[in-house]
Image (cartoon, each protein chain N blue to C red):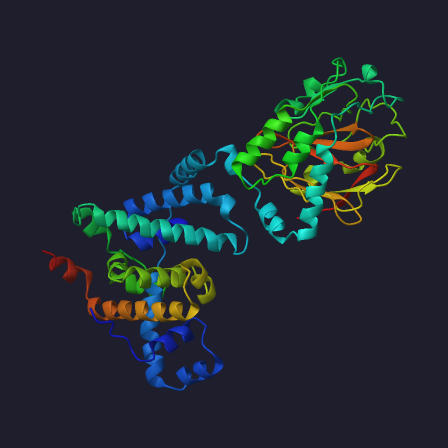
Length: 329
Length: 164
């Protein structure tokens, strides 16, 4: 079949689409012949633009549900902004991240949890317990009557996993497994239980903070009220300070949690202000602080709409405060 | 819009549904490969277009059952009260047949331009071709469609009576 194309069809077609140059446009408009051909091509374009009869709502639902069923295994969902952000990471930041992991590997174990009333070391008097993983956000596990022993996996696992490549589903699984194996009981802060679609992120029944320990919750976290109103993005700035020798100066991770499953992309330290960027429709968030050989580690637990729990583990020696910094819709 | 793209590229409801389903599954499964360098819609259209072309290739491997009476009845757009030039033309021309007459590369280009409304740069991104190629394919596709329109603007009743 021959194309039967007019010698100026490309020009005319581009003119119709607003893709012609000024000179080309002037040429078409000055020629009755070209304008006549433009009318013909315009009819062809209009034919293609004829509306397609839309699918019924039930058909759309079926298509979407089948697609989700077929493709939405938890490990498949990776936050896209993380991928973009990671692509932009300068080499120095990655190097620092590697350093953080190496530092974490040198830490033998979490020795104590400093978060109970008036004492930085008395875990027996701690009012509640939690674990880092799916069960961690179960408010029952945070009940004040459940204080027991402390069993905490070495932070090396979580820290190393936190720095892993979370575009890789295997790494996601490995990280989540690491989190599941990390349990803490005693000395963990209890945040106000938040119902579906959290409207508050506060603290209740929290003992007085130990001024000598990293304790962001009493003074700072209450300012993070009304999580739902924050939308999908929360940026938290962790202020470094205190007397921890070798406290990292730098920016902690940009961490994003996709809506349907929780996953955390590891933190790194660089720049003057560590910060974390969480994005998720949060339903519940709890936080705990542990101290590892004098280094503070913040654990933030997040539960999303699908009841996936995620844990964000941040090694921040000397960290003294957690404050919301910026909302990025 | 994904279904509309599939409907126009494949030319029939059944294949369009299959292609739409495949496109949605590919989008869900491939989300982690979307790197944000393009707009999400552009990426999704690319996935959809590829799903449609895959569906067409599968269809070519299947026996062609031919056009059914029902298809012949419904492939002509009734257009009781056409409202725009496209509907006026489509009242007289079988849109699916006209587009189906185009080579795939022309068809996808004109659909992405005239149905979806992408500009040449976006189409180039979706189809992974140069913008100049987009311009050429759209022009050639429209030229063929214009020829079909000119050759088929006969009353519907006349065309139907001429069917074997």
